[in-house]
Image (cartoon, rainbow, N blue to C red; front, side):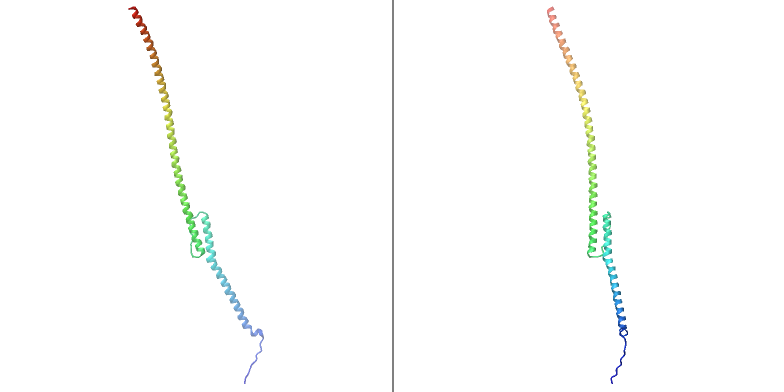
Length: 178
């Protein structure tokens, strides 16, 4: 004998458990999706946005002249390579500025030395000019002395000639008398 039992139940009652399980399953999928999205945002923030914000801060510091600052490099990806290149760039700029400062200091020292040399040359030129003026004065005085001596000698010569003429005239007169 085969017996069968027929139970009559409404569709909503029959599938109520299945619908409830379906709701929980959809809620679980939504919850897992939200957790996945939040975790992705956290990882993106930690691995991309935060390092980029640090590199942005570092670039602003370099622009402000803080070339001794180094950005930490925590990865080997493109962001890490960018950080490493920024560190190298800051070092290169710092070294270039040091060379420029050293060169400027050396140039200032050279200018100071040349300025001192020009001052010394000027002072020596003024001393030579003063010596030349003094020599000219002395030479002028010497010429006057020589001229005065020459004039005196010419006067002596004239007087000597006059005396010689007078003596010659006397000598002729003595010869006539005697």
